[in-house]
Image (cartoon, rainbow, N blue to C red):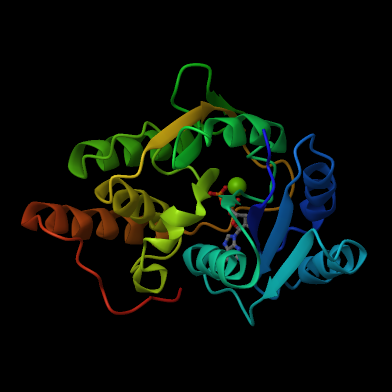
Length: 252
Ligand SMILES: Nc1nc2c(ncn2[C@@H]2O[C@H](COP(=O)(O)OP(=O)(O)O)[C@@H](O)[C@H]2O)c(=O)[nH]1
Ligand SMILES: [Mg+2]
């Protein structure tokens, strides 16, 4: 099985404690992947560390710098645009920098991508789970998943997972710059658009571990915004027809 053309988009904000080890592990995987770090001018110098790797491995590590913390959703989009427009990407993956998503699952995700258009690293299929997570985090995640599945009709089990693989054709079919939501709910909106376009979705079980180093960047405000997104998509679903395409991307 060839993994050629696989690019892993890693959004970062203050991940200096993690980024060294993560890039090292990604470059050492038994399958060949390249890395696109999207850094929002992290005050702790994460972007500089990533630049050092890009200098050492110019074929395998790329960095997109943005001027400030502009949110997770638009960071993914910046990485997708880099992979699709500037690089010969055939598969584009996303993962967090904090080792919640263990790089060791990547080979299995690439293998399943031979059959599926999208692959999710999933906590909620048999064999998957969460480790060291607070009850609050588990409650939030399970609640968000329950709502996304019942209200929006999403079929995947783990609809909020940021550990994903998309084939190039999937991303090309979606008007990325028109995605309305940023932050957490971006992931739900993406999946909603993918499902409506009929792309097939597979899930690989993963054990999600809460971050060991650094701090979470997800605010209470973002959780409220996510609820609004689900409501907005629900209205869209009720109206039926082609997915409505909002004309602006919200930042922050
Ligand atoms: N570029 C960028 N990355 C972000 C932003 N917010 C979060 N991240 C990164 O997105 C990933 C997930 O964020 P994290 O704080 O771990 O979220 P949590 O696991 O849900 O608490 C991490 O790699 C963060 O560094 C942002 O505004 N911009
Ligand atoms: Mg995290």
